[in-house]
Length: 551
Ligand SMILES: [Zn+2]
Image 1: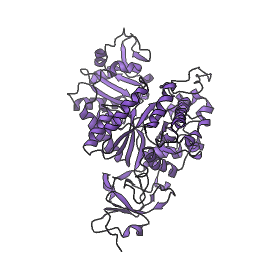
Image 2: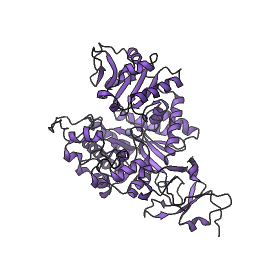
Image 3: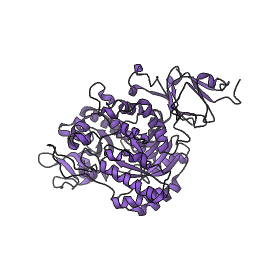
Image 4: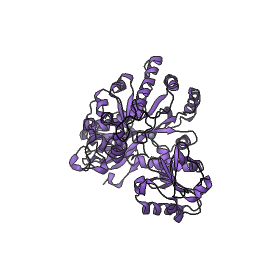
């Protein structure tokens, strides 16, 4: 017996976690006209194979639903890769080689702009202008550090910015200096803007190229949809609209329009207009990003109790709440009433509580809604607030790659929180146990966008680059691989309001699929993070294919 119409694509002989409600397994899937028409054991798809059906023999390899990155900065990450990208090299010699190669490749560029160097590669963490001057003396150079908190510039850039021995440090930053007071080429925090404000804005062509590059890279990792976590007019928005209008946006993208914290709730009208005007093709700007606080490493994350000093005594500093709470209590209910999704950035437990309070105010004002608010990062959550995620229908948007022992955690975070609060970090298991919906994302370019590396850390709470070297970080908060996979597919699809159409492998859904080079669930096959994507499909169309897919 054959089906009325044969499938366009059949994948069979695999290990397929379908991520349906029963968490069932299949070995084969059939696709026609971009939709899934059959899922099950191999015999269930046999009738769908016709003369023109493309058949991929999986031979025990895994197919998952397409991954959805619930918090990523695709355009700016792509831009960083187009510019002078130092994120994959280490050490002064390698940096200089990369910078020189970049400068030679584009002799016309008025500025050399890039990012990705690490403080640990310089004595005292501070780079020198002299090294840059030797290779680029005639054009200004501006290079941001990996964490975005410092910049490395050459003499030409300092000259153009008018930064001299006489210049005062700005209130919110520091100009690193040589022995005689001459600016030395390192700029810290707010001092970076002395030069950054002169760097030419990315052109429409650059933005377009940046998004194309990011999209191709994310597809190559099995990602078929995402939420851009900070969309500004003329920057990210221009890139998405440009690609979507040409039909070149192959990913399904929700944009989180950046809330301007220098303005009040009156900006909601502008957001509403942008949502109406910029919803094109696969791009939907239906979310609003509320940047609630800073980070713990420099004590700007908003905490309920104060940070400790080196000797463990309270400092009185509770970090910075970036959005006035009175504004928030008005803005979030109004956004919710207009059908906007609030997307919060919270690091500290005070920021998290204020976000939950704002959603509670929205629920009180508007009753239940389907706006699906979510809180990203959730580094520290006070235990009293864990249960509120489920109560209020707030999704926990985890960046699991950070939940491990690494230097930033062990040296710059744990000691200043003290043991009790340090144990409240990244409480993914507690959230799941309390019935919260969990989504996952990378925060790329801050961290790798590879979901396999991220899921490895969610499961083991050990960095993939420290396998076997460091202890498990808060072992009680480990989650299973199936839970991590569900968070990265159905959980993130839910956040993006795409769960009816994608996020699981079920008949009738879009054929958004990722094929991997092994059985993901077989630990004899190596670490989770070593798993490689070999093929990615959106609506049944291949958007990434490695020769190994057929091989
Ligand atoms: Zn982010």
